[in-house]
Image (cartoon, rainbow, N blue to C red; front, side, top):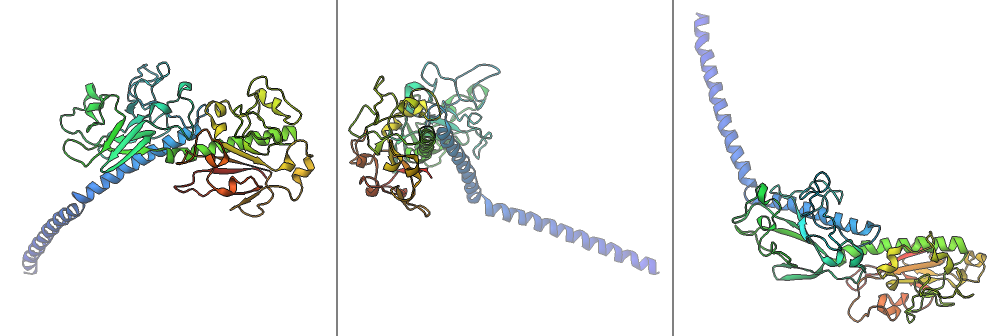
Length: 409
């Protein structure tokens, strides 16, 4: 009897278990639906925007880093990836920048050259590779020179009521196919099947970031002068510091400066504050007793500016000051002695023992002329233009874009 009575109880227990599992399954489905409802569509859209924004930001940072590190033309950028077709070496959509055709990029809009930039294969939230537009004035070729803080980009970006002009480059996320775009193998490198809203027009220099719709969904990020050149200017300043230090090691003193009123850009005898003097400019200029040492700059060596320095007119934008005790014919000992050296305010103490400083200026502000006719045309801080031996470390702001480095110590 006990076995007969136990069997119905077991069946009841199994049935209750099945009902419980069914209820849990229903609750699980409901919970899943609830979770989906909380992340879709608005939250999913936000996450998609974040993914796209992160890819664009990574590409922008890589472009700025590439510009600063370029060995031949700091500030220049590679061609987009669209046209060059050398099987096994460089083909469209392989992430390698196109090769120049003569002095020009074959196209100034194309895919982002992610391999050339040392990036992973960046994609937007729709899984599409990024696109890239470059201002012709920043192509990586001698014919684009000079490339410096005063070089203006040729691109314009419109976003709502805001307009950015003088843009150097634009990175674009195409989003999913819009309108009649066909993203098949036949069209994978056709701009109009990825970009829209005017961004796809051949030869355009104006790009638009609009509200997402069924016919337009491009997202973009501009590379501006204010974003790119502060990094490039620090590269230039450090290069100047290196060759001035090498010059001092060879000669035991620093060269005299170039006067802002002397457009030969050579050494101005006995001048301790001005522009960086250019060696051998003009060619055949005699080396006087009061401007010695420049012969060291007339052949390649560590005490000579890189070839790109003068070629891109950085000497016109680089202010240089040395302590009088550190120039010819003062003895080496006086330059290392106490007192009589430069002071740089805003630096860790001691700040009154500096032998030489370099300031690389940014783009001209309203009221400043180019090439600089006076220190005020190049520099923003009054303390750095008054001609005494006291300087101040510039603080980056909308009204100040100078970069200062101490040559020694």
